[in-house]
Amino acid sequence: MTRTAPALRADLLIVGGGLGGVAAALAALTRGHSVIITEETDWLGGQLTTQATPPDEHPWIEQFGSTASYRRLRNGIRQYYRDWYPLTDVARSDPQLNPGLGRVSKLCHEPRVAVAVIDGMLAPWLATGRLTVLREVEPVHADVVAGCITAVTLSGRDGTERSVSGEYVLDATELGDLLPLTGTDYVTGFESRAETGEPSAPDDAQPDNIQAFSWVFAIANDEGQDHTIVKPASYDHWSTQRPDYWPGPMVGLTAPDPRTLEPLVREFTPNAVAVPGVVPDQSKDPGDRELWEFRRILARASFEPGFIDSDVTVVNWPMIDYVAGSIIDVSAEEKQRHLAGARELSMAMFYWLQTEAPRPDGGAGWPGLHLRGDVLGTDDGFSKAPYIRESRRIRALRTVVEQDVSLLVRGDRGAAVYDDTVGIGMYRIDLHPSTGGDNYIDVPSTPFQIPLGALIPRDATNLLAAGKNAGTTHITNGCFRLHPVEWNIGEAAGALASYCIALGTNPAAVHADERLLSDFQNSLVRDGFELAWPEIKGY
Image: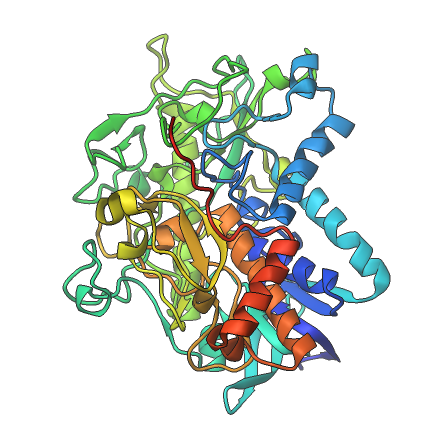
């Protein structure tokens, strides 16, 4: 028999505790409104924490190109290490401290540190009683009347159900889970070129062609020890998988170069010597040529001698991109089968690294490798949730298309200028292999704006997108899905809902009214949003 918990109501109901959800909550709370935020796991933070992926960011992130609150998050992570870890004098004094000295980001760090900082940012609002955080729950039903969401039913891991509601409801889930529950119009996979006009789109829509997700894990290495696991039962299957477009078995060190699609053999040397002072910059170097360094989140060189015996690195590589099926709009059984398949692929990769990976000394395998699930908050070594690249996406008042942001299309004109901008972002249009059999699609982009219309569904009155479910296409999702952009989208959605409550208006009216839109944008600027990229002239 299903147990029922007391219903809860707040000004804002935010379903999904990823980066967009956290940012939305902070935006509404600082504007004086009450918030309920829900999360499927026991950690808030999404791709930064439960999915164990250090921030993918543009090269100017230390100077500009994010909201002030995102900068507080980054600064808080660095300060946490300065306050509590035995850093070297060089690391401690570095204003751009990178604890992992990873090559993917200027700030590679442990997921649990980000959890601590996020919890700290939210703690004052818990004390006021205006914030309620519901963990380990997922939405299973929604009540909708004339396009207005009146309640959402949550189910806990113990089977307890609870009705929650808010004047505004924000979908900050990783897969856009509220969209089908509420009957909101949405799109999945590839739109057709006829619909979007995008140069990289196919002739016909491919709704089931969705970017691969990955199940991430963390490893360290004890040289001279043997931690070899029992050979996984599915190892022979996964170690021989090779899509037609892949230059070898996926379990290995060879994968396409995303930008040229030419075969590229990566290097992998556990505890490769970290070089302090190397500044990651993906505009110049993707950083993935040496995989131990690529997403390293703890580097011995950052800490006093003897503090840690081994670096810790995160395995989120193209070789564990799961292309065998999607977990969007499939049966519960099929979803579980693909989630299990992704874990099996990752475990096969780990076993291969222990037993077959080539060594510089001519040997094979690194038996000293062992899983560090403790830094990911798990017992099994995997991240708490799979790393999600693509979500359901709302049919929005404004949809960002390739022609708006592609450097190949825009050239020296820069990205499209939106009169309804609510933020800025930058990343290459980076699409990983997909379930429809596509190889990488990698298109250079130009620094872009985030339009307010992309957060507002065409057919819902009190629902807003607050993450990767915003109004992008399959293609432009490739540059909108990264950490600082997701945070900005969520923060703007939370601010918009608060603005509408305060003025007794609605999102579509704000978007349509020049005076209201300008007033809302000015309020964002006062709160530390950047609405346009600086124009820099040469000399």
